[in-house]
Length: 125
Image (cartoon, rainbow, N blue to C red):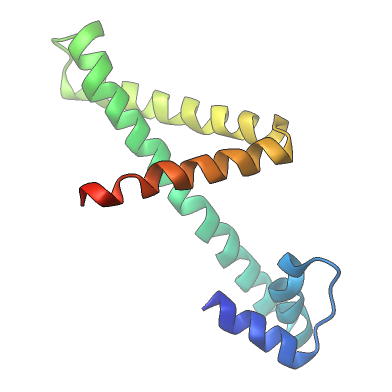
């Protein structure tokens, strides 16, 4: 879908210095301001949803596998929920600090390493 939008930007004659700005510039040029704003908000939400899911998953993994097993084995479901919410918030804040203070080349290397680690799971499947 993004490739089609990229081809649409080329066909529309969108000129940008950075290729990552082609689709936002296409929205700016072709649609009214209110629609471009909604589209930009949708892009932002689309980027935040996977991050939220990953932070919730990390918090649940911590709560079930570390907190309940090692720290407080008799924790109630309510206590697990509170700890999970707190850990989810800490993961989000930690990720934000990590991203804002990281060098871009290090970020690219982490992205490449993540892809390599995920690709190593395919032979097992």
